[in-house]
Image (cartoon, rainbow, N blue to C red; front, side, top):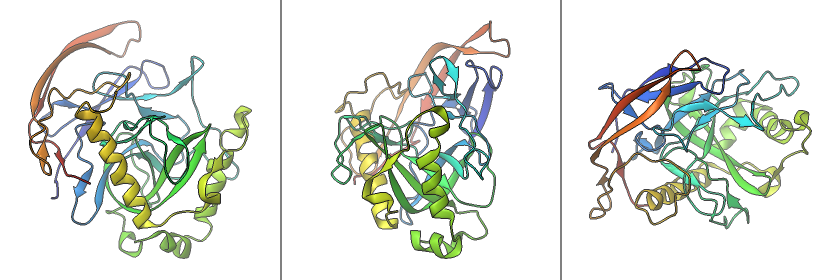
Length: 312
């Protein structure tokens, strides 16, 4: 099944402040969650996935899906109350790819949930390949395409491979992808194509993830598989496995903890091709341009055949 969908974003609050949020809307102008309401697949038959760009290439602000906030907007990460900016790792400026996540997957720090999308790295699940638990986030993507994307842009990507970062004892998959709209996308079909057509790029990616926390006084990051990039088939299996964790989360078979998910009901009767339907009205505060004032709005989220879940 393939989807042809359009999304827009709406900024609230001032950029580079803790109150900044970037909300998502569907084609009808309804507020949606990028975590739960954007389908994982753009074209399931061709293994083309949706991805949400959190951090555009060459920028430093560490933006992420706010998994604990209503509607899961993008926000800037905080560390000890301070806004987080990734240091430049010589000779690079900021992130060296468009960085983001795949929806409807989770990889929790010991249980399977999702870094904000229909994939989720379950923190309660110990990965059989890495021996470590998930980081309670959606799976991250590194888009190597030529375009510098916009913050919050939803793109369709082809999976090429993956790198298993071990971040403070937790598995943090980094999936290498390319935007299908890229003029060179047809030439990239597996991780070896990146090695062949972009010589040095995979090593630069490995070095970046190893070193990016060192300027903040932390030690170098470690990797599973001795830092070896796994191929396309391995990466796609990883994405699909974490999607199954997200389905367990949504069907309430897994403890969501503090994650916020605006899906009222999940009909359990139909797998595969299970549709998430329902209607939710939530009242919460969205920060306006003045960080000291908030605008309370009623947000009606109508979920009507917006997401098709298939069995792994």
